[in-house]
Image (cartoon, rainbow, N blue to C red; front, top):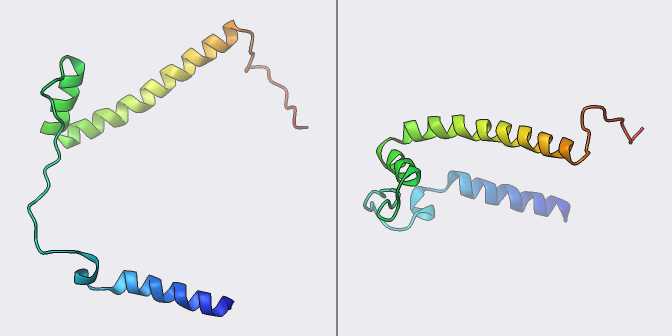
Length: 98
């Protein structure tokens, strides 16, 4: 039984990997998809962010990659400050597992 399941999985994998495109794709060549952000009801920083996405995906990607870790570090520092205010000391922690 185990051998039969193995053969079935290998056959399905081969079918997916080696199947011609007409098996996996429906229809012929379609119109290219244009992905844009709707900026009609946005203002301020949200409009700027959406316009940057629409104009340059590279600049949007670079700024996103820089902003996400920066915000994570800021939130981590703020969480550390708040925890120290409420009495949770993470700097002198003894391992409770040992």
